[in-house]
Image 1 (cartoon, rainbow, N blue to C red):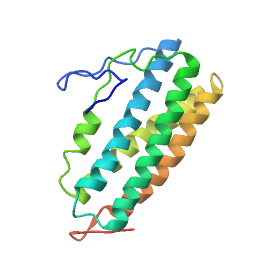
Image 2: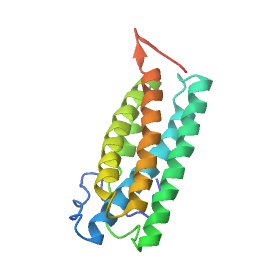
Image 3: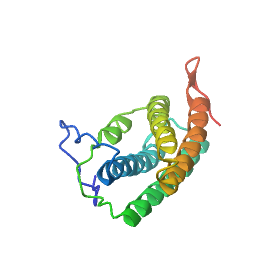
Length: 170
């Protein structure tokens, strides 16, 4: 996968830890990490829609729609990074999320992995919304919008998770 302009660390390596929030580098690290997570999610939803043949036509359409929402989140974050002068290629990021999601071989497996990732992302975005509210309300609002959308994605994932050996479809 070509992740440019992001710089991706080697598969067995972890991305450098985010720097402290006391300075612009820490905020930049968080924006970059969040943007790359959205990039991976965008690609993974489209991958799932094309490759997981046990998914219904309706589920695949839903995954494509959510993928477009993830792309919109990416655009919001990249726009904010540009406004703040944060370089997308400023530090390496990890593509572990992409690799985890695309290791799924069935629609229920993908839905469960996606739900887990969306829940982690939403928790981080909510935290950023709160912690940045006074210091950087523009960035806080972006994280807030993404967190709100992720809540909808979680609800959708709950509808798709397996029940009695079958997947529920919207």
